[in-house]
Length: 271
Image (cartoon, rainbow, N blue to C red; front, side, top):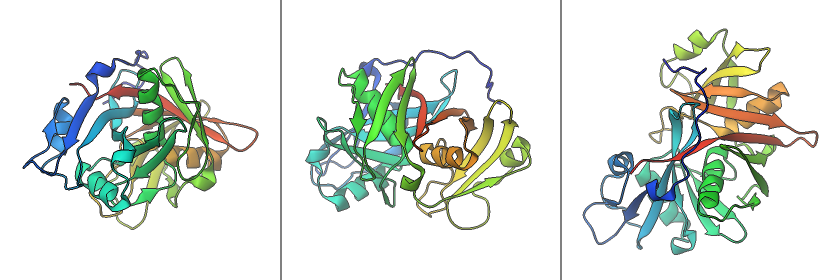
C-alpha cells in the first residue's frame, strides 16, 4: 500500500535521464535509447514515414516518487505533421496520452490518446511544461486546441491552468469510501469515461480516485488524470489533493475567474 504521508522529495530534472525511443520505418523494431519501461511499451516498428524521437516521462508522481502516468513527448512535432501518422504513433506507443510540440516558441501542442485526439488534457501539458523547463526553455503559456494554458512552477510542482468546459465528456461518481473505490474491478461494468472517487479526508480536501476511460483502446485504467481532476474540482468548488491509481498525486487550485490549476511532480523515466 502506498504511504501517502511520506515526505515530499525533489523532482529529478536531469534531462540526461530522459528516456527516448525512436520510431523508424526502415527497422524491424523500435530502438530504445534509454528507459526499460519505454522499450517494453514500444514493440515493433512504427510506420509513420519519418524518424521520431519520443521523450518518456511519468507525470503526477506521488510524494516519494512512486506512481505517475507515463507520457510520450514528441518535441519536434513538425517532423510528423500528418494527423493520421500521429494517431498511429500514439496508438503504437500505448501511453494514456502522447503530446506533440508543434511550435516551441508559441507553445502549440497537439494531444492524442491511443484512439482519439483531445482539445485539452492535464497530464500531457504538465509533463511538457516540466520537460521544456528542464531544458532551459520554461514556457509561460502552452497552446493546445482548447485555448491558452498558463504555466507556472512552484518548488517541485508544475502547474497548468484550464477550464472545466475544455474537458471532454466524462462521468464523476462518488463512492462511500476509499475502500469501495479500491475494490472496483478494472474496468467496472458500463460504458463511457468514469472517474470514481471518495473522500479520504473531506475537511482537508483529500480524495481517493481511480479513472477508467472505457474506450476500448487498451487503456484499462488511467494512472493519473489531470482533466478529470480539474472537472471534479469544478464540481466540488474547492481545491483538492487527489491520490489516484497505485501511487500518483494530483493537486488542484481554484480561481475567481473560473479557471482551475492542476499540478504535480514529474520524473523522467529512468535510463
